[in-house]
Length: 235
Image (cartoon, rainbow, N blue to C red):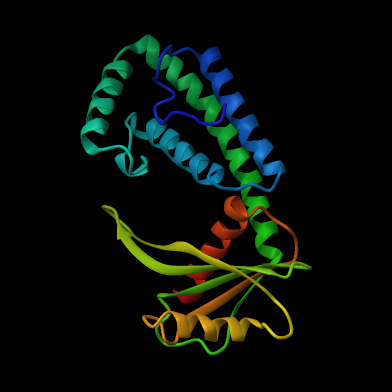
């Protein structure tokens, strides 16, 4: 099972053995991707489901902030009303509580596996500015390079700030621009200069290099972790 529905606990038949089968199939799929060093979107989805399970166990309710932005408040209200009717049935609630007690530690253990993989990947990455870092670093370029690979994947980045009811978050949006070949005559600094000449809106761009000592999947692992390292670095 590649995806777990947002309302997987209450969707369809509320039966412990059935939900256990669904959960184990999903976690098996996640672990298989972890085995191939593919972290995202599996890790973020896992955390979402785990947080929502914890909220359900603590307050017997669903937390809107935990749901992806693709669900509207109107749709969520309908889902919450349906869920409220379900938990008012004592027999069904007993099944849900059994599902929660089984699912929460299983998900937590899988999240720990993801954290170990994340830490392993991060320990094999080097993060450095290319040239002198300008005062304005909220947008610029991100270079991704792998050991023994002359290719440099170049992304333009922009830091975004968004808020929910209680916290402010920083994120990074990226756009793939081009691939360069690193050589003695085509250094990181020279590539940065050419990018500045080409893009007049960024005449002195903040530019950062993430160098990977090992080979990791680009879109599922290397780029997401590089973006997180970037956010940490520029504050």
